[in-house]
Length: 153
Ligand code: FES
Picture 1 (cartoon, rainbow, N blue to C red):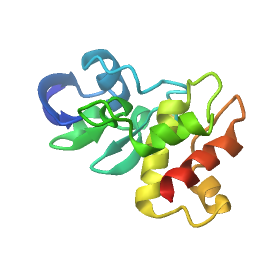
Picture 2: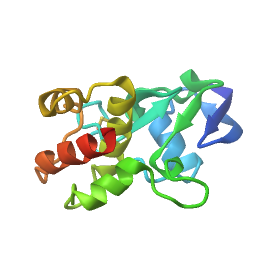
Picture 3: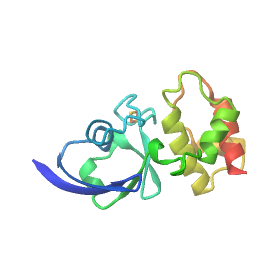
């Protein structure tokens, strides 16, 4: 079965017909041509697919697209300002050298934005705890925490 879905992604409203089984991740990557959100495990274990839905962090691979009716979704592509100025956390990732291969980075940054908004940045330990759903196989955790802490200041 399929459904008609109205959803706003990065400020742009879309209306489209989707198979009810489609994940938000596949909708973003394959239907809306937004491949910045990464598919790591596709089963909720790595955090590479983290996006914001109505301001809250979700794993897009575990979220059915049809559950996002009338929602506002923000992906890594929507984080910089219209003028191209980077979000403070994107800038902090560059300054803190918080990535190696970069595959987990969009998810790390979206999760970090959520972490800061939720106010879970009181200490390095707290940041680490609240970012623990985001795996980095290169092991850049120290620098990722540095970046989140910098942007939270
Ligand atoms: Fe969604 Fe790994 S791809 S958590």
